[in-house]
Length: 90
Image (cartoon, rainbow, N blue to C red; front, side, top):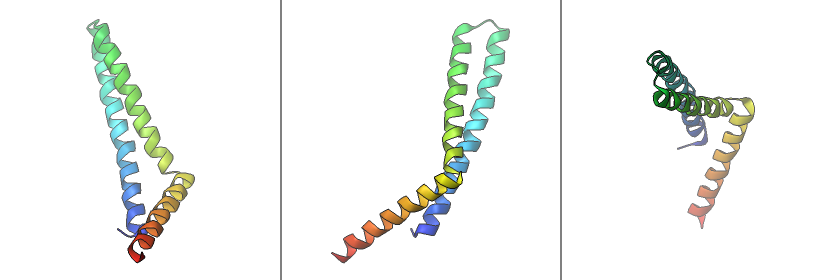
């Protein structure tokens, strides 16, 4: 894959992480509300863990979508492409 295609692939994956993380967090919040109404502390704890994990996933994707994250991704893709080019020459 060329560097531009790879960059768009990475942006798509980051956006998918943000959306997926947000959806899982909302799902976890619903489960938390249900567990609080039914007085189920084990389910409440699992829901809090789901919300925290989902928030971390969304934050990781959002960090990739910042200008700095995109620049780092672009430089990494360029480095990989350079190494691949050198390995095909040798």
